[in-house]
Image (cartoon, rainbow, N blue to C red; front, side, top):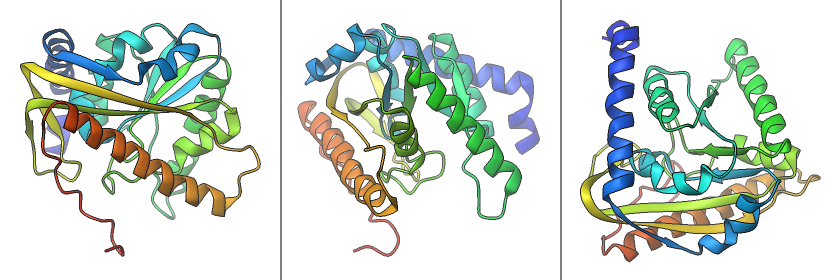
Length: 243
């Protein structure tokens, strides 16, 4: 099955299907934006930016495309089979990818790939580009920011924006990320928060604090987007070790 999913033909078909769906949702959903003014100076200026939204809202992500089309924008995408067709789908709408792998402990090859991807991302945003990241992907835990996005922000000195996205009616599946698929002609909302910055001298303790704070803020923006479309928020399980 894995070999079939990784075949060029299947990946191309899945990428086209997802890309077509993304454009349909962008065009047909009645999107409302809250606090969009916070990102306007960056969109109109020459500085770079890092934009975060939760992995489970990938099917809704083109809600923010009209904003990020105004800048040179790329997306952080996993090199997994799922990531391959997601990258193809995003490329259909003008968002090329930087491929990054979540390296497991002891996997030196993937660790080197991750370091190279972060370096590429830092250079990209430092040069005025925008980078869109699902910071809890590709394998979770759900709605917990992994440190990579904050490392890019610290090294580049560029602002971070949080994007909470929701739609109704929509199908929310029982996957690890509670992925949400909007119905055509639905109501949609994007709630923006930022700009946020990581101090260049932030130590490990400060980075851990920011991970917790920004995870809570991005979840709050997502819950606010759900409220704007009249959707009851799904219960998000606490990460292992928390109650």
